[in-house]
Length: 146
Picture 1 (tube, one colour):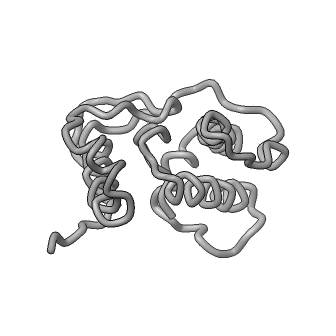
Picture 2: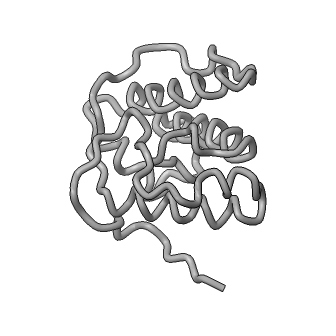
């Protein structure tokens, strides 16, 4: 499961669709509607919110908006209900780690998009996140470079 800290505008089509699906899975987990992924570390930042389900809906709303801007038709009815207006603190180190991870994926999967993003040093965050100083999160898996 990858609930990106970076803004969804940077994702290629596969990444955007995957983020939507994984966000819907996260919503099901936070509602208590599934047994799998209950202990996934990326869910902790949503669980720590006053209204975890409303927070994941707000996360998904931004993904939905990006999909709509690209002409995709994601099902908005899947995120009906209250959406949080609170922002979640996330570290600059986590944001930069994820952006580097995305660029490694894009280099193979979507070289054109990779070329568009490779020189960008300060990516925008997903609108639900407020970036604060700090390193990459301890729960983040290290990726070996080949």
